[in-house]
Length: 436
Image (cartoon, rainbow, N blue to C red; front, side, top):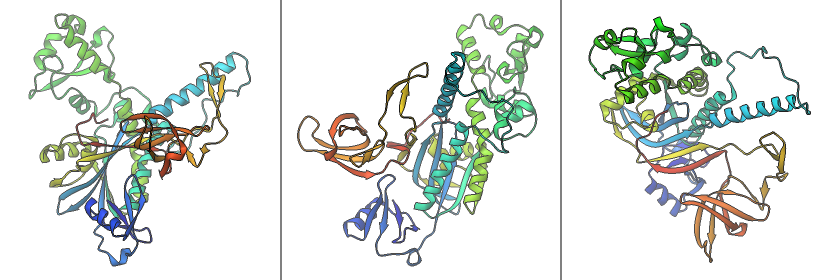
């Protein structure tokens, strides 16, 4: 559990049993519900031994893993695990829909804003809102954890492949990562990882591999990364300049798998690459010690220590280490939900308002997104329910718990646990995930 001194300064984290004892004896009070933080009433940081903790960050396009651990002589002991789910995709979709509404109003000759020039200059280091969100939310949680725990060092993973170096043959960063076709010095290493260091046609490993054009150059195929794969020498010579459909006409399933894998989008890798430098600079400015590591080293650490692959365990294995002696059994899954909306209407598919929302967000002292506990004494909904609530002007609120949605509970049954902070929280057991 995170522990603060009586002035709100972070102390060394403690065990849940010790935290319960401090609360039971009246020596501490609850400072925050999720993540759980207690504040001591009779001790300051000067009177305590504070060894410090370290952060491991494994940034991703959809999910970012964050691990809090202690490190001594190359031995890491995991204390907390956080999986941060970004909402960059939702931001992108909303911006796209808003632009479509504007275009639709112009073509229908309705009241509208005139289109802006497409060649407007942008400041150096500019990132699109969906990409900037990934940097901001990761930094927000890194600084939050530094307020609750004595963070001494931050380890952050830099991605293994520079997709824009592959597209333009030069080191670019920021928004420039979002443009161009893929070609350059890192193509071979990227393809080896994409195709599992095996021949795409026969699956052979441990032999010299060539780069093959799935659709031959002599028949109009391009040098784009989506048209390249790895092939062993016999398969490469046997395929020659045949179209892949003719070469694999006896193996339709293999053909479908190769075409699907070849067309797999690089959107996630490009998003991580576009934000990695911004995240690095932001962390370096906020923390006294920031160390960068490669994705290859994280994978090597994970395999050497026998650690399963998850977002949070990847974060625990970032950087230089010898052993991992403890991994958290549970993960706090943090989902970026936003803080509501400024709009007071809902629009139909043409962009016209179809209903009006209340002009206020708070009703009976609560607002949507608050973490609360409802104690219902009687009726079909009797029991204790804890979760995020959705308020209504009628005073009949909905609450979403770990077991599902419960509707229509009177506001008099609720007790506020934590104000809405733009995130939703769930606790789950550590387990394998698709690390993206």
